[in-house]
Image 1: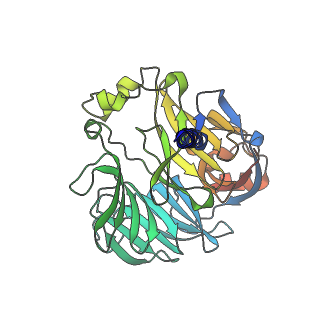
Image 2 (image 1 turned 135 degrees about the horizontal axis):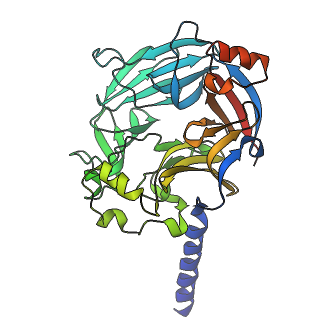
Image 3 (image 1 turned 180 degrees about the horizontal axis):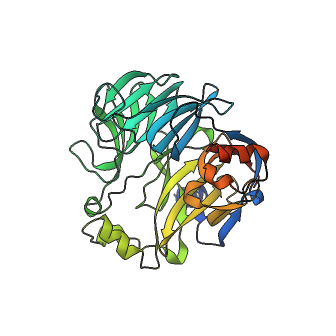
Length: 371
């Protein structure tokens, strides 16, 4: 009996240690740089000048994916999908038309999965499946007012509902089958307080990290979760002395998002992380503190972190670019793509970039992280 007790205690301690080891803390308020030099964290591999070829200029990139030797780009201004080939030529675009039920009526977020493009339309409760020519192959109706998603195969989707509680869900994340219209998992319960004021339309809540691991996050939680068959705590955003009280969202009361933001921006707290990007090795996201935005670039394998307010793009333009706009996407294990508007090229000494500036041509820069 004594040996069994010792075995039980030892096993419990080992399990406790294992959990602590697996949950990595990301210290986001340490050594914040006003301007992080790009050359200190990355090498540049390619500059690609975008040729519109009669198509529409786009900006405010939500994400970029590799797709059948092309790039598929989701922009927010205007909201549309663009296909760009390896020469930088825009070869196709699809725009939204809210009045045409046979077109893409709205565009919240896109994903690439099994050689198809999937586009979420939050306002019209739809997910569109597109081919490599941006033609609609099918329209999947969903019963959820959601703002982020990921296809999982066989009409199964992981949906992020935000803080919208409906008759279909109690949680922020649901595993949903579009054919049967059934929820197999309902995860991370929505607190009674937050639907009143936490109404922020953010995307990229369902991320793919290394080994095709799915990462989930919500701005009211400092934990980033891993999801395979169940939800597990994986990383912890550590705001240290600037952290909100543990029960903040459960005990606070705000009438609307405006009141929440105006009051929080006068406090010392760090809060509301968003704009997440991930690839095989790195995670990048932004949060609010002292009325401004701070971003963190985190190596998932080594734990090394860079916290910054702006990127000093000191390789091509030598211009400080706001952190919100720099990393358009993270790809593969350690690559990234950044979309640079032509206005930033005005002082370039490179003849090709001078020409791009004069022709109002944006560029894409392809880089590889080195830390």
